[in-house]
Every structure is written in structure tokens, then in C-alpha cells.
Amino acid sequence: MAKKMTAKEKAERAKTKKELQADGIIPLDKKPLNRKKFIEETTTEFAREYDDSAYDMLIYLLEAVQIMTAHGTIKEKHSLQAVGAAKSLKIAVRLKQFSEKLKTEGRTTYKLKEKYEYIKDIIDL
Image (cartoon, rainbow, N blue to C red; front, side, top):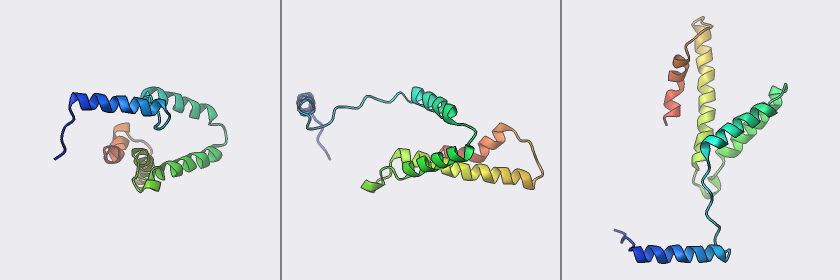
């Protein structure tokens, strides 16, 4: 079992890290991402760039998903971002299946909760 570091050891490690960062040997700490702000800005930007050419935007969107699903695979460890992108693909497939299910049932309307329940298991993965 690993030995826990003492407060002195932790302080020494932090000091060494700061020195290495100051010398440019290791990168500076990244500022944490404000997820809410990022999502809001990104969805606004996407909506603004989305023009009458839906097919062009679809190509860019699919290319972005392809890039993200490959994220982290170089190290042979898939990132959480890659999993999120793969979830988006899986949800898209499930939404198509939901639409086809409605057609076979002869339905043109549904409740949002019904649609959500159809994809909830993927979201909760």
C-alpha cells in the first residue's frame, strides 16, 4: 500500500512543481473550463454559423464527431470527450429508431418525455 505524503513532502513537491513550471520544463496548470459558459457560447456560435446549407453543416458536424471519437486513442486510452462524442452518435441512431417506431405505429405526435425515455439509458451510461 502506498505511503501517504506528509505536509512537508506535499509542500516540497508543490515548490518543485512551481520551479519546474517557471523554468518551462513542465507546462503551467490549465485554468478550469467554465462548462456552462462554454456550452452556451458554443451553441450560440453554432446557431449563428448554421445557414441555409444544412448539408454543409452536417458534414462539418460529422467530421467534428469523428475527430472527437478518435481523441485520446493515440495513447490507446479513450478520453471522456471521445465517449461523449460516441454517445452523441448513439443517441442519433436511437432518435432515428424512435422516429421509425412512430411511423410504424402510424403516429405523428409524441410527448417529449416519451422521446427522452427512449434515449435516457444512453445519457446515463
